[in-house]
Image 1 (cartoon, rainbow over the protein chains, first blue to last red):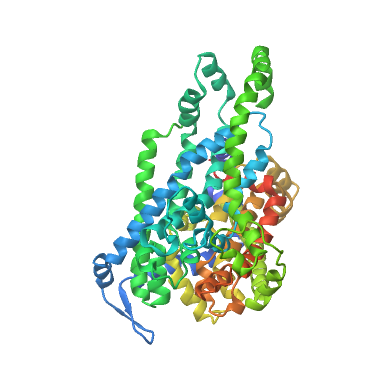
Image 2: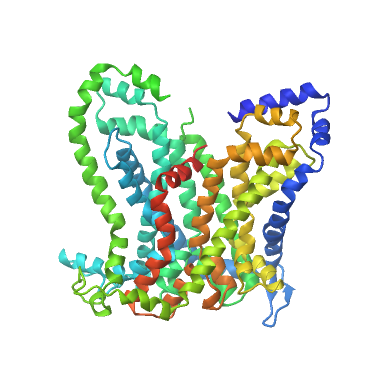
Amino acid sequence: MTTSTTRIRSTRAKASSPRPGGAAARRDGFWPWLFVLPLLGGISLFFLWPIVQTFYYSFTEWGVFGGSTFTGVANYVRLFADPQLYSALGNTLLYTGIVLLGIPIAVYIASLLNTPGLRFASFYRVLFFLPYVAMPTAVAMVWRIIFNGDFGILNYVLSLVGIDGPYWTSTPGFAMLAVAIVGLWSSLGFSMIILAAGLKNIPPELYEAAELDGATPWRRFTSVTVPLLTPSIFFVLIITIISSFQLFDLLYALLGSANPVLPKSMSLVYFFYSQGFVSNDKGYAAAIAMVIFVIIGIVTVLQFRLQKRWVNND
Amino acid sequence: MTRPRAAARPVTIAVRKPKRRGGSHLVAHIILGGGGLLMAFPFVWQIIMSLSTNAEVQSVVPTFWPAELQWQNYAEVFDRMPFLAQLKTSVLLTVIRVVAQIVLCTMAGYAFARMRFRGRAVLLGVTLSILMVPSQVYLISQYQIVQGFGWLDTLIGIVAPGLFSAFGTFLMRTAFLNMPLELEEAARLDGANPFQIFWKIMLPLAKPSISVLAITTTLWSWNELLWPLVVSTYSETMPLSAGLATLVGDKNTDYPVMMAASLMAMAPVLILFILLQRRVIDGLASSGLK
């Protein structure tokens, strides 16, 4: 679709004038600027300039009474020696790893929802999708009660099978696990609908052919569904990893800003927030932001490299 | 696509299927029903807890249904936090951003897709490059700009950066790129100026993508925490997301009132979603397709 329209346009532009760019520029005159300048003004002020400025800030140290001095790479030297960075990175990776476990679940749920003629399919879809649209700070409140060590229903259920549940939100390792469980719960629905849309594009003839060849439902799932779904799976993978690296809301709301377990359970973004807006060390926070930027950049590049290997784009 | 498929399907399969389907559907219903219940459980639990007494919430053996429904927990929310002021902020914040993004992103998206001007490719590239930058990178500086304008603790301060969206511009540009050129040409021959063509012809055609933009902006504006938390310090000027989060920070242990408050804070978006569920789900799903 896209390629055909651009092709039409370029041939048409060539036909109307020997210099396509010049002719078109004359035709549209000031109009394009009227259309793009309001947006570009805002984008420059609130996004482009801040990116440049943060990069500069990451080389400065901020005084208590405002004002900043250029300190070269001091912030980065301090940051790479700061155990907090590695603990935040580790926590973020742990969280991302657990949330990623939702993708195979989402593939399976989406393929079940795609069963032809299944009743209540849209009702199930709504149930699975509801957590995604719910406000994270609001759902975190009920999860705090569910996870409560003394009276939470989770520990009650665990006690029925003889397990003595921990104080989820105030024990270092378990706090991150609790946050990740909620993260998985709230992102599952989004992965599911993207994958379900991808499944609709798989021609049913392939399933019929596989069926005629005597493939079992499981074999059809692994040999038809999964390979043909790789572009959607890849998209979901990227979105999940990038949004998991942005973990903040759930952590803040689930653990609470006064929780003594926080220093050991920070995510990268929480680390950034606590340095920049709680300790007011904005130069240091800017360096953290740049490191997050680079990490996400590396992850994205790696993913696109891998995509070439295993995504089936036919 | 659907019609030839149905016609091509041999009759034998159509006859064979119903029998086999019955069995496999049962398994699907059990898994989807069970999973769905698990997904919905926190919401159900939240409703039950919001109608219980604090003692019932904190009983070691869970009270699955309160002895008496405590509706006054909902009334008490208004004494505990400036709920109405925060609700007003959340609503205004969301509406202003949605309207502004629709206007700015459709206009810029249209120009980037269909108009010719000097520097178009560079400006588009620069705008889209923002999509790859995590928000922490511009947060500190955005804070300072808002502070410099004297907008801390004001609605405009919370709203301002979110009026402009690179994602929305990308979304609308793609929508306009995929539209046929003929309509535009015909209107141009009739003497319509570029704004009339945009407003009367192209914009109505872009409705599906505009609704995707409206949905994503609504969800993000209503639920977002970090930015409002950073630019507002008084609970009166915060939106609901930040208001609830700071309520927790106060070591508040009146659980039923907290449950009532969080349900009331989520309710507008959840109700909107349930009413428009097909459009929301299909819209968001289509944003993921290339």
